[in-house]
Length: 479
Image 1 (cartoon, one colour):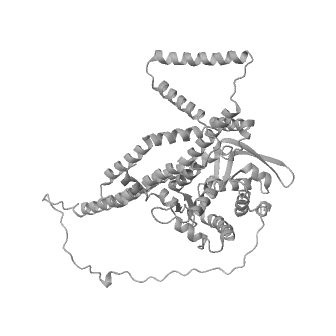
Image 2 (tube, rainbow, N blue to C red; image 1 turned 90 degrees about the vertical axis):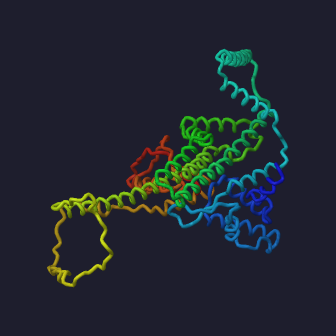
Image 3 (tube, rainbow, N blue to C red; image 1 turned 60 degrees about the vertical axis):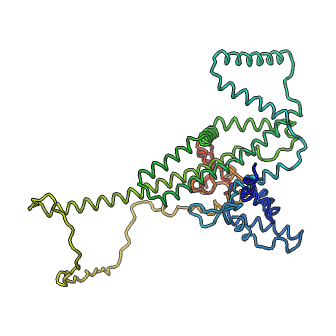
């Protein structure tokens, strides 16, 4: 923390946000629309609508001259420049921009949250966590088998002592203070984990930007450039952060671990001491928050691979075109000297520059186009030899109506499953409507398809017949 370092640090976006004139408006608005609901990105229209409501409320309290600019102008100001507070970007197949918090803005909000005076600070649980981490590090790095056996024997004796106490009628349980202390630490760790995802995504995005700039400006040979790019990509994947994220994603994608995770959260939230802490919606929806954050990081990472693939395709196409031109020229030269092969070793030369002369008599004569003669005979209706009822019994599935139902259901919820939508809006077109929902989920409309878990969806035909279909579980979330 040297003086010159702190002088340069004043240009950091986090510092710039804290000293901004409209910092109370910016930070309170970001906290309400991004942090509390754990929103990863919001469309410009939705964000403008929310900011308009906020500005109207503040102007009603503090006067009409408070924050005089329109909501859209404020958003563009906050997303402009190198030290911006919001990231404005466009997704594929969309003309409307989206906004997301930058890691620097989230750090500023988290730092301000830490300034609040806490009524309860758990020191025992933190010290025990340090003790457990120290023991885990020593046990995992111990190379002496006898020492490892001694540690395991000690753990075995402690477990047997607890078993004997339970058999004798004693109760082994945390008191109310210990339960609350560990639960507060659990919530703090969960929030920190979700906050780290924006920084991880920013790291991948910087790598993507660096690679695109290198491809555009580099004058190296293609092989050297690709070797350097893939080397950096492998280095990121093999780094400690890359390995940790791969291990996290593999653990989160395990159906068994997901079920265990949800079961543990539900059991903890059912404890009376935990209920008295008045927990928010963070832990009950922790699984979906992690899936949403991890999926966005995966999409950012895959964009780098897509960019490299396009570069390779373009280069291969250009080289193939050049090779085919060379081969064609060699073939022409070979035909020219086929009957009279040259005696000299060096027989190829370039013609002098000359005018291209095209004689008028070399042009082909004019050929009038053939006129098509149309018959004017009257058409005679034939007799159909098959049942035509099926041609008139088709029905149309309105995908815009289905998308409107999904968005209406998400006005009060951040996520909703397809089963819940079918309960609220029963299927009218049967399997065709179900397939349309599946198509919406795969069209990147905020849909998540859990292929590991299947559900049964039922509907009734017009004649009252009950039908059902087994399909992967589909979850729609706000985009």
